[in-house]
Amino acid sequence: MPVISLDAALPSQQLSVTPPRDGLALRGRIQIPGDKSISHRALMLGAVAEGETVIQGLLLGEDPRSTARCFQALGAEISELNAEKVIVKGIGLGNLQEPGDILDAGNSGTTLRLMLGLLAAQPGCFFSLTGDQSLRSRPMSRVIAPLEKMGAQIWGRRQNSLAPLAVQGQVLKPIHYISPIASAQVKSCVLLAGLNIPGETQVTEPALSRDHSERMLKAFGADLTVDPETRSVCLRGPARLRGQAVTVPGDISSAAFWLVAAAILPGSDLLIENVGVNPTRTGVLEALAAMGADITQENQREVAGEPVADLRVKAGPLNGVTLGGDLIPRLIDEIPILAVAAAYAQGTTRIEDAAELRVKESDRLAVMARELSALGAQVTELPDGLDITGGTPLRGGAVDSYTDHRIAMSLAIAALGAQGQTVLSQAEAASISYPDFFATLARLCGDEG
Image (cartoon, rainbow, N blue to C red; front, side, top):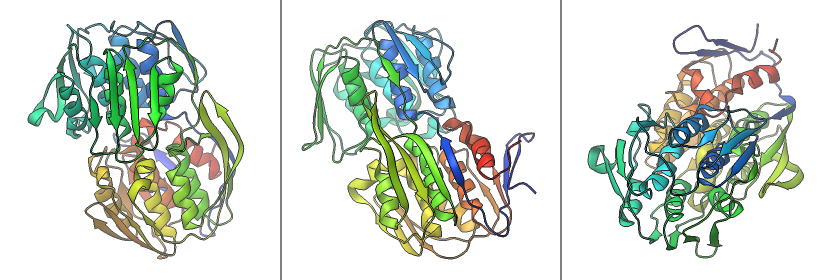
Protein backbone atom coordinates (compact mmCIF):
# COMPACT_ATOMS: atom_id res chain seq x y z
CA MET A 1 0.00 0.00 0.00
CA PRO A 2 1.48 3.39 -0.92
CA VAL A 3 2.24 5.88 1.83
CA ILE A 4 0.95 8.79 -0.27
CA SER A 5 -2.24 8.76 -2.34
CA LEU A 6 -3.67 11.90 -3.95
CA ASP A 7 -7.22 11.81 -5.33
CA ALA A 8 -7.27 14.55 -7.94
CA ALA A 9 -10.64 13.47 -9.33
CA LEU A 10 -12.53 15.12 -6.52
CA PRO A 11 -13.49 18.83 -6.79
CA SER A 12 -11.34 19.35 -3.71
CA GLN A 13 -8.27 17.14 -3.79
CA GLN A 14 -7.82 14.70 -0.93
CA LEU A 15 -4.43 13.44 0.17
CA SER A 16 -4.22 10.15 2.04
CA VAL A 17 -1.11 9.46 4.13
CA THR A 18 -0.62 6.00 5.65
CA PRO A 19 2.87 5.51 7.13
CA PRO A 20 4.20 1.95 7.42
CA ARG A 21 3.88 0.41 10.88
CA ASP A 22 7.64 0.15 11.25
CA GLY A 23 8.06 3.86 10.53
CA LEU A 24 9.31 5.97 7.67
CA ALA A 25 12.75 7.50 7.06
CA LEU A 26 13.54 10.19 4.49
CA ARG A 27 16.89 9.82 2.74
CA GLY A 28 18.64 11.25 -0.29
CA ARG A 29 18.81 14.73 -1.75
CA ILE A 30 16.20 17.11 -3.10
CA GLN A 31 15.96 20.52 -4.70
CA ILE A 32 13.22 22.91 -3.75
CA PRO A 33 11.37 25.59 -5.73
CA GLY A 34 12.68 29.12 -6.08
CA ASP A 35 12.13 31.63 -3.32
CA LYS A 36 8.64 33.10 -3.55
CA SER A 37 9.57 36.51 -2.13
CA ILE A 38 12.49 36.92 -4.52
CA SER A 39 10.45 35.67 -7.48
CA HIS A 40 7.78 38.32 -6.91
CA ARG A 41 10.33 41.11 -6.63
CA ALA A 42 12.31 40.01 -9.68
CA LEU A 43 9.16 40.13 -11.83
CA MET A 44 8.06 43.50 -10.43
CA LEU A 45 11.40 45.29 -10.65
CA GLY A 46 12.08 43.79 -14.06
CA ALA A 47 8.74 45.18 -15.23
CA VAL A 48 9.51 48.77 -14.15
CA ALA A 49 13.20 48.71 -15.06
CA GLU A 50 14.67 49.83 -18.37
CA GLY A 51 15.86 47.05 -20.63
CA GLU A 52 15.76 43.32 -20.18
CA THR A 53 15.73 41.26 -16.99
CA VAL A 54 16.54 37.55 -17.18
CA ILE A 55 15.32 35.42 -14.28
CA GLN A 56 16.57 31.89 -13.60
CA GLY A 57 15.00 29.62 -10.99
CA LEU A 58 11.67 31.47 -10.79
CA LEU A 59 9.05 29.83 -8.59
CA LEU A 60 6.26 28.48 -10.77
CA GLY A 61 3.57 28.62 -8.08
CA GLU A 62 0.24 30.38 -8.47
CA ASP A 63 1.35 33.51 -6.57
CA PRO A 64 4.19 34.53 -8.94
CA ARG A 65 1.89 33.75 -11.87
CA SER A 66 -0.54 36.31 -10.45
CA THR A 67 2.26 38.88 -10.29
CA ALA A 68 3.27 38.15 -13.89
CA ARG A 69 -0.32 38.50 -15.16
CA CYS A 70 -0.81 41.80 -13.35
CA PHE A 71 2.35 43.37 -14.75
CA GLN A 72 1.63 42.09 -18.24
CA ALA A 73 -1.70 43.92 -17.96
CA LEU A 74 0.27 47.03 -16.90
CA GLY A 75 2.35 46.95 -20.08
CA ALA A 76 5.44 44.82 -19.37
CA GLU A 77 6.43 42.00 -21.71
CA ILE A 78 7.02 38.79 -19.75
CA SER A 79 7.87 35.52 -21.49
CA GLU A 80 6.26 32.21 -20.62
CA LEU A 81 7.09 31.33 -17.03
CA ASN A 82 9.51 28.47 -16.49
CA ALA A 83 12.27 27.65 -14.05
CA GLU A 84 15.06 27.79 -16.65
CA LYS A 85 14.73 31.34 -17.99
CA VAL A 86 12.10 34.06 -17.91
CA ILE A 87 12.68 37.27 -19.86
CA VAL A 88 11.04 40.49 -18.70
CA LYS A 89 11.17 43.51 -21.01
CA GLY A 90 10.67 46.46 -18.70
CA ILE A 91 8.83 49.67 -19.50
CA GLY A 92 10.65 51.99 -17.09
CA LEU A 93 9.47 53.73 -13.94
CA GLY A 94 6.47 56.00 -14.42
CA ASN A 95 5.36 54.22 -17.58
CA LEU A 96 2.85 51.72 -16.22
CA GLN A 97 -0.23 51.62 -18.43
CA GLU A 98 -3.79 51.94 -17.21
CA PRO A 99 -5.31 48.51 -17.84
CA GLY A 100 -8.75 48.06 -19.35
CA ASP A 101 -9.78 45.52 -16.73
CA ILE A 102 -9.44 44.75 -13.03
CA LEU A 103 -6.02 43.56 -11.84
CA ASP A 104 -6.45 40.20 -10.09
CA ALA A 105 -3.80 39.24 -7.52
CA GLY A 106 -5.37 35.82 -6.90
CA ASN A 107 -4.31 34.53 -3.48
CA SER A 108 -1.15 36.63 -3.34
CA GLY A 109 -0.94 39.25 -0.62
CA THR A 110 2.59 40.11 -1.72
CA THR A 111 1.39 40.90 -5.24
CA LEU A 112 -1.41 43.17 -4.06
CA ARG A 113 0.42 44.99 -1.28
CA LEU A 114 3.67 45.65 -3.17
CA MET A 115 1.88 46.58 -6.39
CA LEU A 116 -0.10 49.25 -4.54
CA GLY A 117 3.11 51.20 -3.92
CA LEU A 118 3.94 51.36 -7.63
CA LEU A 119 0.39 52.12 -8.75
CA ALA A 120 -0.24 54.86 -6.18
CA ALA A 121 2.79 56.75 -7.56
CA GLN A 122 1.63 56.57 -11.20
CA PRO A 123 0.01 60.00 -11.83
CA GLY A 124 -3.00 60.21 -14.06
CA CYS A 125 -3.84 56.51 -14.12
CA PHE A 126 -6.74 54.70 -12.46
CA PHE A 127 -6.44 51.10 -11.29
CA SER A 128 -8.88 48.55 -9.86
CA LEU A 129 -7.50 45.59 -7.88
CA THR A 130 -8.99 42.46 -6.38
CA GLY A 131 -8.09 38.90 -5.37
CA ASP A 132 -9.68 35.60 -4.44
CA GLN A 133 -12.04 35.20 -1.48
CA SER A 134 -9.17 34.68 0.96
CA LEU A 135 -7.24 37.74 -0.20
CA ARG A 136 -10.36 39.92 -0.12
CA SER A 137 -10.64 39.17 3.61
CA ARG A 138 -7.05 40.13 4.44
CA PRO A 139 -6.30 43.66 5.74
CA MET A 140 -4.71 46.13 3.35
CA SER A 141 -4.81 49.07 5.76
CA ARG A 142 -1.24 48.39 6.88
CA VAL A 143 0.06 49.46 3.47
CA ILE A 144 -2.68 51.94 2.60
CA ALA A 145 -2.01 54.02 5.76
CA PRO A 146 1.59 54.99 4.85
CA LEU A 147 0.65 55.48 1.20
CA GLU A 148 -2.08 57.92 2.21
CA LYS A 149 0.49 59.83 4.28
CA MET A 150 2.42 60.16 1.02
CA GLY A 151 -0.68 61.61 -0.70
CA ALA A 152 -2.13 58.46 -2.28
CA GLN A 153 -5.82 58.19 -3.15
CA ILE A 154 -7.05 54.66 -2.46
CA TRP A 155 -10.57 53.39 -1.84
CA GLY A 156 -11.69 50.01 -0.55
CA ARG A 157 -14.25 48.21 1.57
CA ARG A 158 -14.52 48.70 5.32
CA GLN A 159 -12.73 52.02 5.62
CA ASN A 160 -10.19 51.25 2.90
CA SER A 161 -9.12 48.04 4.63
CA LEU A 162 -10.29 45.32 2.25
CA ALA A 163 -10.16 44.60 -1.47
CA PRO A 164 -11.51 45.19 -4.04
CA LEU A 165 -9.54 48.43 -4.13
CA ALA A 166 -9.45 51.44 -6.43
CA VAL A 167 -6.33 53.60 -6.87
CA GLN A 168 -6.05 56.99 -8.51
CA GLY A 169 -2.35 57.53 -9.22
CA GLN A 170 -0.89 60.74 -7.81
CA VAL A 171 2.32 62.74 -7.53
CA LEU A 172 3.36 61.58 -4.07
CA LYS A 173 5.64 63.12 -1.46
CA PRO A 174 8.46 61.37 0.42
CA ILE A 175 7.97 60.52 4.10
CA HIS A 176 9.77 58.88 6.98
CA TYR A 177 7.39 56.10 7.95
CA ILE A 178 7.83 54.55 11.39
CA SER A 179 6.06 51.25 11.00
CA PRO A 180 4.22 49.82 14.03
CA ILE A 181 4.99 46.29 12.81
CA ALA A 182 7.98 44.52 11.31
CA SER A 183 6.67 43.70 7.85
CA ALA A 184 8.63 43.27 4.65
CA GLN A 185 5.44 43.91 2.67
CA VAL A 186 4.83 47.27 4.35
CA LYS A 187 8.46 48.29 3.99
CA SER A 188 8.63 47.20 0.35
CA CYS A 189 5.37 48.91 -0.59
CA VAL A 190 6.60 52.27 0.75
CA LEU A 191 10.02 51.90 -0.90
CA LEU A 192 8.46 51.01 -4.25
CA ALA A 193 6.28 54.12 -4.04
CA GLY A 194 9.42 56.15 -3.28
CA LEU A 195 11.09 55.05 -6.50
CA ASN A 196 9.06 57.62 -8.44
CA ILE A 197 9.31 60.47 -5.88
CA PRO A 198 12.05 63.15 -5.64
CA GLY A 199 13.64 63.14 -2.20
CA GLU A 200 14.24 60.63 0.59
CA THR A 201 11.70 57.96 1.44
CA GLN A 202 12.55 56.24 4.71
CA VAL A 203 11.07 53.30 6.62
CA THR A 204 11.93 52.37 10.22
CA GLU A 205 10.75 49.08 11.73
CA PRO A 206 10.50 47.80 15.32
CA ALA A 207 12.48 44.70 14.30
CA LEU A 208 14.28 43.53 11.17
CA SER A 209 12.05 41.99 8.51
CA ARG A 210 13.29 40.17 5.42
CA ASP A 211 15.47 42.38 3.22
CA HIS A 212 15.03 40.94 -0.29
CA SER A 213 13.62 44.24 -1.57
CA GLU A 214 16.61 46.22 -0.35
CA ARG A 215 19.09 43.80 -1.90
CA MET A 216 17.30 43.68 -5.23
CA LEU A 217 16.64 47.42 -5.44
CA LYS A 218 20.36 48.03 -5.00
CA ALA A 219 21.17 45.46 -7.68
CA PHE A 220 18.78 47.22 -10.11
CA GLY A 221 20.46 50.56 -9.47
CA ALA A 222 18.40 52.29 -6.77
CA ASP A 223 20.19 54.71 -4.41
CA LEU A 224 19.42 53.03 -1.11
CA THR A 225 21.10 52.77 2.28
CA VAL A 226 20.35 50.49 5.22
CA ASP A 227 21.08 51.21 8.89
CA PRO A 228 20.77 47.91 10.80
CA GLU A 229 21.23 49.61 14.18
CA THR A 230 18.15 51.80 13.76
CA ARG A 231 16.38 49.24 11.55
CA SER A 232 15.91 51.94 8.92
CA VAL A 233 16.04 51.96 5.12
CA CYS A 234 16.37 55.17 3.12
CA LEU A 235 15.74 55.40 -0.63
CA ARG A 236 16.60 58.52 -2.63
CA GLY A 237 14.40 59.11 -5.63
CA PRO A 238 13.53 59.37 -8.35
CA ALA A 239 15.33 56.19 -9.29
CA ARG A 240 16.35 54.80 -12.63
CA LEU A 241 16.32 51.02 -12.62
CA ARG A 242 18.09 48.88 -15.20
CA GLY A 243 17.33 45.28 -16.07
CA GLN A 244 19.47 42.62 -14.43
CA ALA A 245 20.23 38.90 -14.47
CA VAL A 246 18.56 37.39 -11.40
CA THR A 247 19.16 33.87 -10.08
CA VAL A 248 16.50 32.85 -7.57
CA PRO A 249 17.76 30.55 -4.77
CA GLY A 250 15.62 27.81 -3.24
CA ASP A 251 12.97 29.01 -0.80
CA ILE A 252 13.86 28.35 2.84
CA SER A 253 10.15 28.43 3.65
CA SER A 254 9.71 25.42 1.35
CA ALA A 255 12.83 23.77 2.77
CA ALA A 256 11.36 24.08 6.27
CA PHE A 257 8.84 21.30 5.62
CA TRP A 258 11.60 18.84 4.76
CA LEU A 259 13.81 20.06 7.62
CA VAL A 260 11.08 19.20 10.10
CA ALA A 261 10.10 15.97 8.35
CA ALA A 262 13.63 14.58 8.44
CA ALA A 263 14.16 15.80 12.01
CA ILE A 264 11.11 13.96 13.39
CA LEU A 265 11.29 10.69 11.41
CA PRO A 266 13.87 8.30 12.94
CA GLY A 267 16.65 7.21 10.62
CA SER A 268 16.27 10.14 8.22
CA ASP A 269 19.27 11.81 6.55
CA LEU A 270 18.30 14.37 3.93
CA LEU A 271 20.27 16.92 1.88
CA ILE A 272 18.31 19.94 0.64
CA GLU A 273 20.28 21.69 -2.08
CA ASN A 274 20.59 25.35 -3.05
CA VAL A 275 18.63 26.95 -0.21
CA GLY A 276 18.64 30.71 0.32
CA VAL A 277 19.99 31.43 3.81
CA ASN A 278 19.49 35.19 3.94
CA PRO A 279 19.94 36.05 7.65
CA THR A 280 16.58 37.85 7.72
CA ARG A 281 14.94 34.51 6.79
CA THR A 282 16.87 31.95 8.86
CA GLY A 283 14.84 32.18 12.05
CA VAL A 284 13.53 28.68 11.33
CA LEU A 285 17.09 27.33 11.46
CA GLU A 286 17.67 29.06 14.80
CA ALA A 287 14.40 27.74 16.17
CA LEU A 288 15.10 24.16 15.12
CA ALA A 289 18.65 24.39 16.46
CA ALA A 290 17.24 25.53 19.81
CA MET A 291 14.98 22.46 19.75
CA GLY A 292 18.03 20.26 19.21
CA ALA A 293 17.68 19.49 15.50
CA ASP A 294 20.79 18.18 13.71
CA ILE A 295 21.09 20.62 10.78
CA THR A 296 24.34 21.68 9.10
CA GLN A 297 25.06 24.11 6.29
CA GLU A 298 27.29 22.80 3.49
CA ASN A 299 28.70 24.39 0.32
CA GLN A 300 28.05 27.94 1.52
CA ARG A 301 28.23 30.52 -1.27
CA GLU A 302 26.64 33.70 -2.64
CA VAL A 303 24.34 33.74 -5.69
CA ALA A 304 23.20 37.06 -7.17
CA GLY A 305 23.69 38.87 -3.88
CA GLU A 306 21.89 36.27 -1.75
CA PRO A 307 23.66 33.80 0.59
CA VAL A 308 22.99 30.16 -0.35
CA ALA A 309 23.86 26.79 1.18
CA ASP A 310 22.96 23.11 1.06
CA LEU A 311 21.20 22.01 4.25
CA ARG A 312 21.76 18.53 5.68
CA VAL A 313 19.30 17.37 8.33
CA LYS A 314 19.42 14.14 10.33
CA ALA A 315 16.78 12.76 12.63
CA GLY A 316 17.19 13.22 16.36
CA PRO A 317 15.26 14.02 19.54
CA LEU A 318 13.70 17.47 19.77
CA ASN A 319 12.87 19.45 22.89
CA GLY A 320 10.29 22.11 23.63
CA VAL A 321 11.34 25.78 23.50
CA THR A 322 9.84 29.27 23.71
CA LEU A 323 9.73 31.20 20.42
CA GLY A 324 8.89 34.90 20.46
CA GLY A 325 10.14 38.48 20.27
CA ASP A 326 12.36 39.67 17.44
CA LEU A 327 12.76 36.10 16.17
CA ILE A 328 9.15 35.91 15.01
CA PRO A 329 9.41 38.24 11.95
CA ARG A 330 12.24 36.03 10.67
CA LEU A 331 10.17 32.82 10.83
CA ILE A 332 6.58 34.02 10.58
CA ASP A 333 5.83 31.83 7.53
CA GLU A 334 7.39 28.76 9.15
CA ILE A 335 5.33 28.76 12.35
CA PRO A 336 2.78 26.19 11.07
CA ILE A 337 5.53 23.62 10.37
CA LEU A 338 7.34 24.54 13.59
CA ALA A 339 4.09 23.72 15.39
CA VAL A 340 4.36 20.24 13.86
CA ALA A 341 7.94 19.93 15.13
CA ALA A 342 6.70 20.95 18.58
CA ALA A 343 4.06 18.20 18.53
CA TYR A 344 6.87 15.64 18.07
CA ALA A 345 9.23 17.24 20.62
CA GLN A 346 9.53 16.37 24.29
CA GLY A 347 8.12 19.01 26.61
CA THR A 348 6.16 22.17 25.91
CA THR A 349 6.81 24.66 23.14
CA ARG A 350 5.31 28.13 23.47
CA ILE A 351 4.94 30.33 20.39
CA GLU A 352 4.13 33.94 21.23
CA ASP A 353 4.10 37.40 19.61
CA ALA A 354 2.63 35.82 16.47
CA ALA A 355 -0.82 37.45 16.24
CA GLU A 356 0.10 38.35 12.64
CA LEU A 357 -0.78 34.74 11.74
CA ARG A 358 -4.46 35.44 12.28
CA VAL A 359 -4.60 37.53 9.10
CA LYS A 360 -2.72 35.27 6.70
CA GLU A 361 -4.35 33.02 4.08
CA SER A 362 -6.23 31.56 7.05
CA ASP A 363 -6.18 32.18 10.79
CA ARG A 364 -3.13 29.98 11.07
CA LEU A 365 -3.13 29.91 14.88
CA ALA A 366 -6.72 28.72 15.10
CA VAL A 367 -6.41 26.28 12.20
CA MET A 368 -3.17 24.66 13.39
CA ALA A 369 -4.53 24.35 16.93
CA ARG A 370 -7.71 22.69 15.66
CA GLU A 371 -6.15 20.41 13.03
CA LEU A 372 -3.20 19.22 15.14
CA SER A 373 -5.64 18.50 17.97
CA ALA A 374 -7.62 16.35 15.50
CA LEU A 375 -4.47 14.23 15.15
CA GLY A 376 -4.15 13.87 18.92
CA ALA A 377 -1.67 16.66 19.68
CA GLN A 378 -2.00 18.64 22.89
CA VAL A 379 -2.41 22.23 21.68
CA THR A 380 -3.72 25.32 23.45
CA GLU A 381 -4.52 28.35 21.34
CA LEU A 382 -3.29 31.67 22.76
CA PRO A 383 -4.27 35.19 21.66
CA ASP A 384 -0.89 35.62 19.96
CA GLY A 385 0.41 32.07 19.65
CA LEU A 386 0.23 28.44 20.69
CA ASP A 387 1.19 26.18 23.58
CA ILE A 388 2.06 22.71 22.30
CA THR A 389 2.97 19.84 24.63
CA GLY A 390 4.74 17.16 22.62
CA GLY A 391 5.59 13.56 23.28
CA THR A 392 2.11 12.07 22.75
CA PRO A 393 2.06 9.87 19.62
CA LEU A 394 -0.13 11.35 16.90
CA ARG A 395 -2.90 9.29 15.33
CA GLY A 396 -4.36 9.49 11.87
CA GLY A 397 -7.53 11.44 11.27
CA ALA A 398 -9.43 13.78 8.98
CA VAL A 399 -7.90 17.27 8.58
CA ASP A 400 -8.38 20.24 6.27
CA SER A 401 -6.03 22.86 4.79
CA TYR A 402 -8.69 25.59 4.73
CA THR A 403 -7.18 26.43 1.30
CA ASP A 404 -3.96 27.60 2.99
CA HIS A 405 -0.83 26.27 1.27
CA ARG A 406 1.37 26.25 4.37
CA ILE A 407 -1.32 24.52 6.42
CA ALA A 408 -1.70 21.85 3.72
CA MET A 409 2.01 21.02 3.64
CA SER A 410 2.43 21.20 7.43
CA LEU A 411 -0.40 18.73 8.03
CA ALA A 412 0.99 16.37 5.38
CA ILE A 413 4.32 16.32 7.24
CA ALA A 414 2.55 15.82 10.59
CA ALA A 415 0.80 12.76 9.13
CA LEU A 416 4.10 11.07 8.20
CA GLY A 417 4.76 10.11 11.81
CA ALA A 418 1.16 9.48 12.88
CA GLN A 419 -0.31 6.05 13.55
CA GLY A 420 -2.81 5.06 10.89
CA GLN A 421 -4.29 6.91 7.94
CA THR A 422 -4.66 10.67 7.70
CA VAL A 423 -6.91 12.22 5.06
CA LEU A 424 -6.18 15.85 4.16
CA SER A 425 -8.90 17.78 2.34
CA GLN A 426 -8.18 20.70 -0.01
CA ALA A 427 -4.64 19.48 -0.48
CA GLU A 428 -4.41 21.36 -3.79
CA ALA A 429 -3.68 24.55 -1.84
CA ALA A 430 -0.01 23.50 -1.74
CA SER A 431 0.36 24.55 -5.40
CA ILE A 432 0.21 28.22 -4.36
CA SER A 433 3.88 28.09 -3.37
CA TYR A 434 5.10 24.53 -4.06
CA PRO A 435 3.48 22.85 -7.09
CA ASP A 436 5.64 19.70 -6.86
CA PHE A 437 5.36 19.23 -3.09
CA PHE A 438 3.29 16.04 -3.17
CA ALA A 439 5.31 14.53 -6.01
CA THR A 440 8.49 15.13 -3.98
CA LEU A 441 6.82 13.69 -0.90
CA ALA A 442 5.78 10.57 -2.80
CA ARG A 443 9.31 10.11 -4.15
CA LEU A 444 10.86 10.41 -0.70
CA CYS A 445 8.34 7.89 0.58
CA GLY A 446 9.23 5.45 -2.20
CA ASP A 447 5.86 5.85 -3.96
CA GLU A 448 6.93 7.36 -7.28
CA GLY A 449 6.22 5.68 -10.58
